[in-house]
Length: 151
Image (cartoon, rainbow, N blue to C red; front, side, top):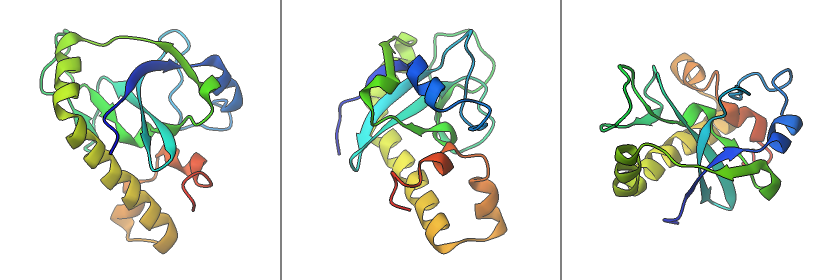
């Protein structure tokens, strides 16, 4: 498992090639671009968005943050996108120091948890599943990257 990740924003090229009108589940806020953790897993580069106000459990929620927020901040697995083309990876950025330290300390755990989500999605798309599983993946952005995932 690779231990290197970067923190970036997604580029305008990404949003041009994946417009909100066609890819409704991809997070897009031009006035406040999302910070993503870029990591390579099984030959694909994934951009995992850091979000505030996460209301589900398909994520990693930070335990420590220096931000003034009453909501759950974390890394949202449901909105992961594949950015194999370097032009999709935008400018480097930073995050709250407490969150960064936690991410460094919990990196392997975060990646393991994301791999479980990813493998569950691949299994669901290949083999089907029950109603609960269908709801779990109903709004995932992975649906737009099935060819890259070998589905």
